[in-house]
Image 1: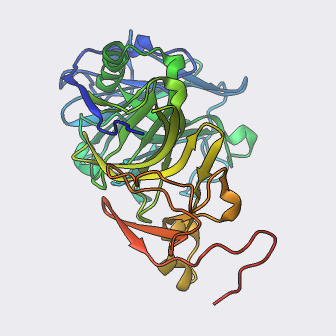
Image 2: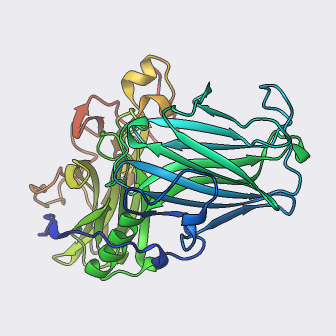
Image 3: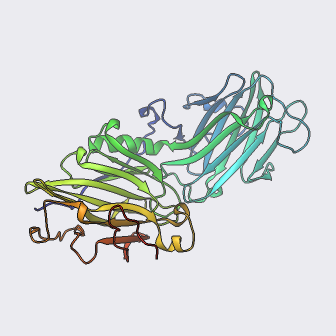
Length: 413
């Protein structure tokens, strides 16, 4: 049987149009790109009219949040509807109305801003990363009382968030209003999740158009650090392609006939440092049979897909079948040190036994081993188990114990 495993370069385009409207209402909030000087930090929100608003909260206290960004900073304009704005003298946070805003860059820096509004003769109080924030501090903040609550504006310079740049697809945020009427402990109006940067939303639309995809065609949509550099990338698998989106997009075709031949797609931390890899299992057809491949992909420089591993894990010819069982297991070195899977990354373990073959024997199996990928393990091979560890964008074969017979426990070393 002959197959094609080479991927086809699809497209790489820069897109700079603001396009938050292409997303449905339930999508994450979008920060629009603006010219420098658009925001004047005075707490009044006059310049924010027409900027897309995200609302959250309950009847007693609601927030309307807007965000924009320029070449230098990320800006927030927040309106709090609260008929009873409450402060008390002192620095204790409990039982005081306050807004907390945490912004983080996957694989990069983070910062937390707390704003206590000025009311009833009590001066406003602001903190950045737990420290008092002065008027000439690293973050600009102002608040203002309104008829039915209060409002605030904040500008967070890029230099305060390691890895933040206008090319990112998103930043992570946790925005919560703590209402003293409800004890002040939890956020009564809150949002937790990604804030999409508008250039990446336009790139997402361009990607769908170029790849001839609909949103319903998408199998995987993950925003995470895929290349080990500060900042996140948005990686999508849909139809017969996979793409990466920042403020531009690039995509490559996967070696399958149809979308249904992509059996599995997920983002996993194999290395153990928080960097995600893309794991795809797919099916190829040819010569009257089929085979399944397990592919591991990495990313470099925010945009370039790297094929780390392609392992044959299933073959079928008529009624004859052979498969390799595979699983992700705690890294061998992490297990020896007593670390958990979450902190130590994961290895890929492949196993085969007599029960994994039907219709073939060692004598009747005449298939030529695959030369374009790592060939499938066979139960009559000397090696019936294979383990891969992942360092950077490299898969390193490791020693593995042979699989235990079905129904019997494997002896511990």
